[in-house]
Length: 212
Image (cartoon, rainbow, N blue to C red; front, side, top):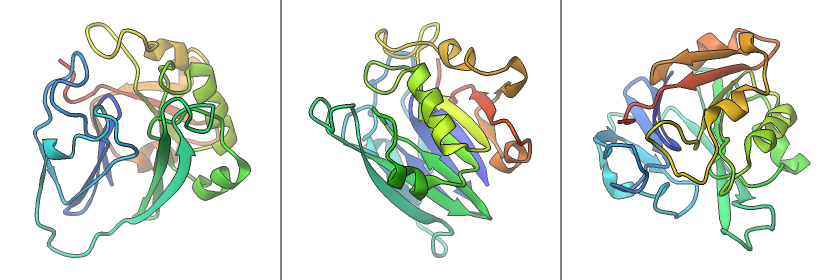
């Protein structure tokens, strides 16, 4: 399996010749990120905000066979007030090649036991860490503790010249873990490599492909 962090909360997950893109942003929606130029067999959006629902930004390619992914969607909320502030959110779990990768969308609250059960056994948890619109660094760390994934890819944060000004930096999240748990990578990686490095979760600080 191949994971590519495209930018903001947008991720491409590939198994064989089949690709799914989760939460593409619309052109120009997020400061500091270039317009997406990607194709995939499928697009999944966790909610309908423009920085997560740019379906038209992805070219849909014909599939040569059935999808290798088992897809599970778990209902959740974009905020801590059951959607009263920002509406619903869906957690997306993809399973293929004996691996389970989970995209948390714009999760805005700690998880209920039933939600934890749905995504238990995650080899990779992709989670927003910037706060304001989502859980902040401490909230994301609390969810990591709830789910106990083997590896974590933080997303939805700001940095030098990219991301929304109101959200926090990646460093606020990585500072909550031992330095030995955090590794910077390029945009693409194989989650199986990181899932093998238990028992502490490995934090994969991937550089977004479309970061300017």
